[in-house]
Length: 220
Image 1 (cartoon, rainbow, N blue to C red):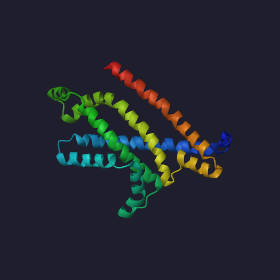
Image 2: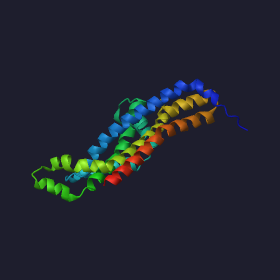
Image 3: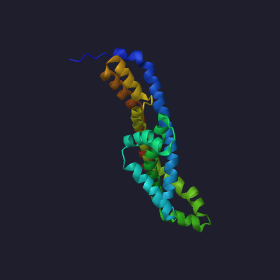
Image 4: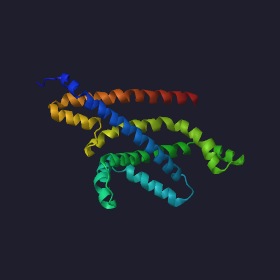
């Protein structure tokens, strides 16, 4: 029978600390960039200019309908060859994950805006606001309230997606765990700890999202 020995984990504690820091930093970067891309793309999906809508929809469908792991590998290995640009693994990972997340954020934002009754915009226009002012002052504040829970859920998924950057040798939590496992020959203990770390980070966030959803539901 396998003899568990979690005592060996202490010797690799700084690998895990550094890996967790990289994972959280990556998450912050790809969530912020993804939200920016998603907001821009979501607004384009609502444009009256058809080519802009088509362009935005093409972007969303390409990134939603291809696996993120394939996108990571393509951005790191294929894009530099096609574009003739040297790209670090961290840059490729941030770019791929941000665009991937942005596609999902885009649909959340578009759906949130479309969920606001048309009468709200019509009333704002009747008061003399421009379409941009109506969107910024009337529609978006109301839509944001409905978008927050799904946006937070997608951000939690983005945190889990960062584990895939280890395939590009980015020193995140999983990559550091793999290094420790190869050095210690104790993969079960190592990967069990990694799973526990992800759970400890993610579970409070899922509780927060659930609580926020209930609060918004009561407010409505």
